[in-house]
Image (cartoon, rainbow, N blue to C red; front, side, top):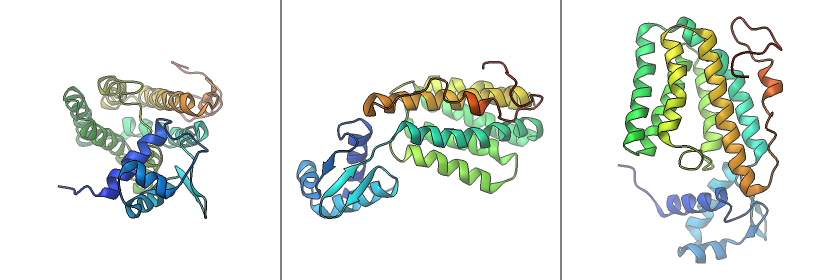
Length: 245
């Protein structure tokens, strides 16, 4: 069993205050004030603040305190543009080349997601969501690709930005993965890529709208169009439209 330290609790509390807008972007806070607010000593607050700085949620200003940076619409857009460029063709490849063992593994991850969604277990649900995406990447046999996708996911999730319980339920999110898994199982690269593209664009848009509600940033509803028109999909030339676009 993983031991939760005071620093862990302070980190989680501060992160939640940032992503919900309780501590708005641009606001300045002293270590002393944060320690008093949370009822802890300054040491775990300092350690938690360093972790928050590492993931880009705050900047530390010498002799002034901690400046809240937050998650911006631009942060989410940048991460999901990269995920689209990596995961859409990787999903097409998985549909074309995954053997039955890998297909079974991908289908099993979806079933785990469904089970934990019904059990309302967000931690296990999220773990199997990650494993499903990891298994899709495994068809290419490229560990670097899988690591990059994991890093991109972490860069958003570590900041506490999630759609679960905010924009959609776990049941809805599992259902969104179902057509991707089905297309891989039937070895349909076009459908698999299209459904992965739609899933990533939908997730990014929901996250950007959540962030915008706190930060006031403007979300372009067509943010992905320029990139999507040039993403590789089997049988589609650059600039061509496809189902769902």
